[in-house]
Image 1 (cartoon, protein in one colour):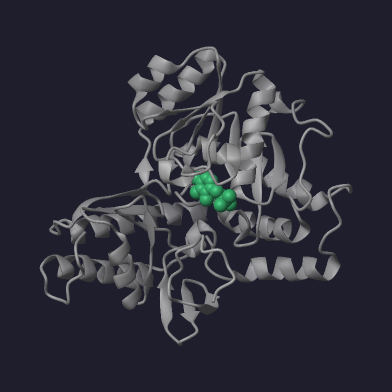
Image 2 (cartoon, protein in one colour):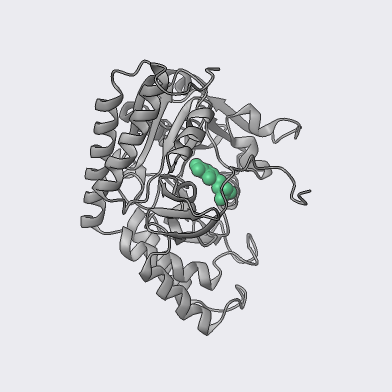
Length: 391
Ligand SMILES: *Cc1c(COP(=O)(O)O)cnc(C)c1O
């Protein structure tokens, strides 16, 4: 028997090695990995510059606590500040913890407690982050939750205008909803939310945990929309697979997180920080991000073209290298079938196949993925191959 709680519905694949865009399993199968460890390994598996930085830190020290000065945390914070246009950073170990810190920061700064979040959103599994999340299945059985979150429909400016008032501490939003189904925010909606926040003295918190660190072809996804958040949270892609999270805040919040107001034993640990600095050095470059944009447009364009005749497919959408293929059926069986064709992809919501390829994926790798996806989704549709039971 397994002694692990069965919180994860695990795939029947056990990785033994991974490099670049590939993952090899115990039975010797080599997979093209378009999951990047759920949007974490943005530079592919084991990028050499990150490996080198981590090895260097492994030889220096592993952990000393946050009682000491840290020029490497300072450098990592500077890079995040420069890349975001915000000012101050707190390092945590995960995305949920970064969002917890963001919520605490917003409450303390405004002296208010209500936070507006959105349907289908995902903000993490801890209590405040779970309460913030706009998906019932995440919260089932855990109530009562924090009752200070108000959930509004995504991309519906009229609705949020109707509920916004001076009692709101913050609006927390993913500009591209990841786990919920790869829904891209519209320019009008996001600009409108920013305007409402200004008007009512609410802080704008952008959850960039999945979309940050180059995923969409900008440092952070909100930069596509020319909006100015007060707080930004990041995690997944920040350290190429080492556990980390960060909350980045504007200068007007500096005094809110003073000595003793927040903390973490492991947050900003030296190994993860070394990995983060090396990762940011590669990702936060104009040329690199330009190529990510081009690759994303190429991949989305080819999927749209090749799947346009497939009635199983409702929509192909995304931004840069976060891409959703919405089906008319539950996605799970097709994801499993793609594994039989040595391609690893993710679900998002119930009916969406989500691609989070490494930002370093080559054109050939993207072409291979498109051809396998097209083969599976169209062949099953017309019943050419052994059919998957439609749900
Ligand atoms: C993954 C994710 C989180 C939670 O991050 P953890 O590290 O799993 O706690 C929060 N928000 C978004 C948008 C995410 O994609």
